Image (cartoon, rainbow, N blue to C red; front, side):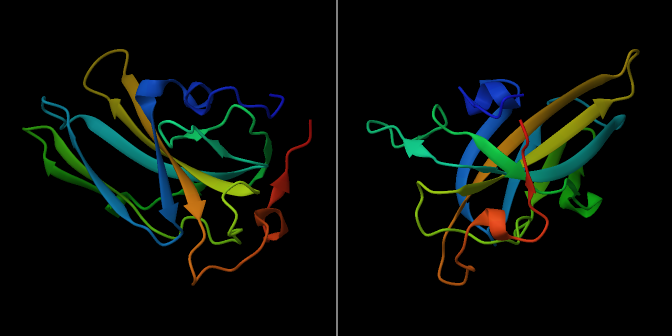
Length: 167
């Protein structure tokens, strides 16, 4: 991979599988999934990894982030998120609450939204083990981290644990 992103959603696996959100480092969010079927045989996993892009621009019309000129400069280690963040509300009805905890990224953030930007990609994967072969699917959130007054100001690339992408 060259590190160049033409479309962040394509990089992550398709527009239907990623939701881009701008958040503060301590933002926690809960999403409800309704599968509309019995999920007794489903296994769930939640993991995250923070990547850093050199710049980020925004569409003047929609205000949506654009990754067309973004280059990945590096990343931080993958993090497995505790199973307690996945709450089966009802196996029979097929409802699950998924909580993305805050502080998945602990490093520095620049106050400039167009500068070096950390983006934590959270993956929620489910496997239906009740069929052969097993069916596996995944949704992702791309959490663009923004500066807030209680954040350490600085480049993410100077944060401990940052691994530069070598191309």
